[in-house]
Length: 170
Image (cartoon, rainbow, N blue to C red; front, side, top):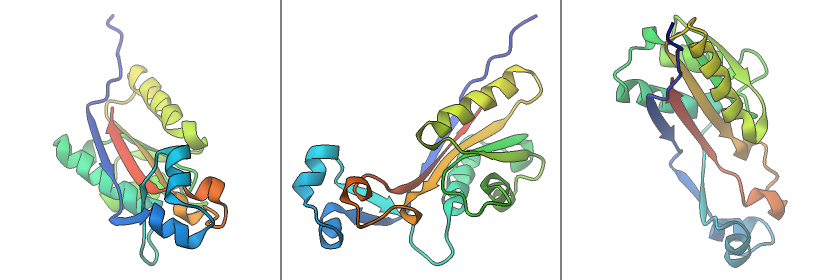
């Protein structure tokens, strides 16, 4: 019997339009472009702006782009896992919201919360479901709206984080 292997067959990302520059951060917190760049190498980060927009809104853009790029119908997806520490809300899971907004109706979905390593855990989890033979097409999304939890008075952390989403097809 041949062992089933999981493979990434598509990758898609999404970043919001608004760019928060180091120059703008200089007006918000006691820092300079030189201080930020020397310590992090970061010059700008994307921020999700707009009333009522959350992590799921960025993730949906990545998922829709992934479906289009891989020529996959939403009805072909059997599972969606969202790795996030900034869910839209505690319940329902952000993965459920993403699935609904992206038209993925034949899949079960859940969130995985493991901070920086969340996407790797989600990817490993999805791979095990594929390798078990129970599922054939799974989307793994890593998405966070870090601007919703960052303290913009703390220059040690506010200079690091932005908002974005990435999705892969297994």
